[in-house]
Length: 347
Image 1: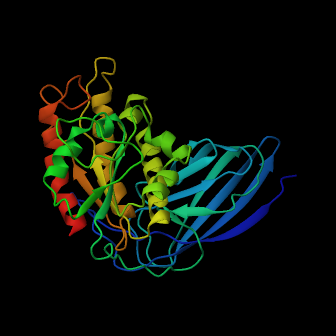
Image 2: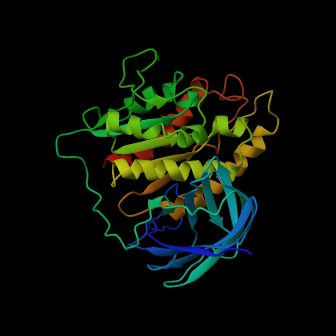
Image 3: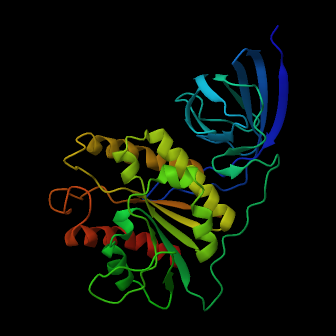
């Protein structure tokens, strides 16, 4: 006989924005939701469950639900959404037809999974911890007068090895107004500059998220702004776009946990065409095409996400040394693309 168990868990959703600029327009009011997690059936080695999500706040146009299985379960089939799973961490994004939820509207996702029916104990929706209430939005306040704005460049070798676009960008910013921060030191770019960063060569965004590496970097440096060019190694490793975006969502949640007023700049990454990965060019296009919609679903008034197009006009033939890493011309293009978004973030 199949047993039935029900766990009703309240949840709160992030603010939902629309559009990207380069900048995703922030939502104007707080929102919240309720999640009812129900184990609908169980059998030896597996179970079925449903997750009903009710939007308690303003209408939303897209959603991403995250939770962690407590006992090593694995989703084997899911309907009414798109699922990705890394280890115990599960992310469900809306299907093409159920992304819009009016106030008090409910959508239900069902799935089958292997393992026991032990229920997750918490959820996030669009990167915000689920609390069961409609949270007030903290004001987005600038750093105290007289203190520079702390900016963390986050990414892989394109950001940090040596990442001389950071040096060129720094040259164009008012030195008294900015403080580039990170646990990694600057590398030589031919002149002195403020070059601390979190550009970790060879790192994957999905691994950084899975291994919870970012919170320690945030705690050590206390940034006000994060500028993120991440995903190149994920693409090279054939990580699906949905998995990469789920990692981005987790990283955004960690940024906001460290600073609720964090300003987040996210790059549509530069093209790549390495000789060993003829498929990478198309994978980058797929990832970049998905980033504006992802950002619009997470951007908030308190913690806006700005999308910076680093892809358009960048040539792997003339702007890289190897089809991946920027040469001097590429570094200049990257710096120039970041500049307007950084100027807006520190204004």
